[in-house]
Image (tube, rainbow, N blue to C red; front, side, top):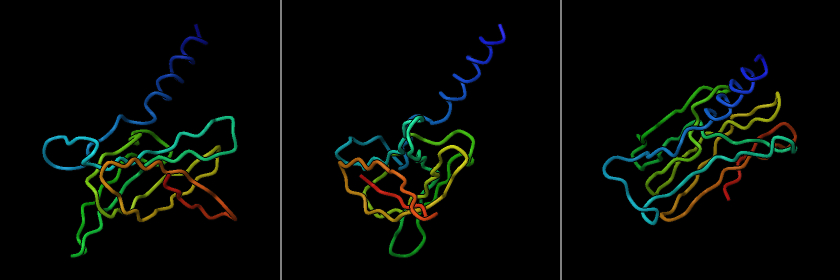
Length: 133
């Protein structure tokens, strides 16, 4: 019985770790060809690679006051697996983690409609970098 409770608890925690895709623009849903998709990266838990969870973004606009959004709490749950945004320039914040090591870098990305961007963390010499593929 004890093992069953542990299995259920672990399953629930793992399944809640990342939310479903989140639409981040006003109005009706648009087709994939009209939006940009940003995805976090779920690394192999048995490999030496970092997971990348989207923890927030700020839309960069010419007048300096862009939309800003933050998701979840680092180390907990409620991070979206992917977000759907309108094309444009965004400063994206990422929670990179593996084992007991974590970093919170950000990267400015120019996103184009119809494209999917997978965010992957690279840590070198104690500095975290985000690669968008």
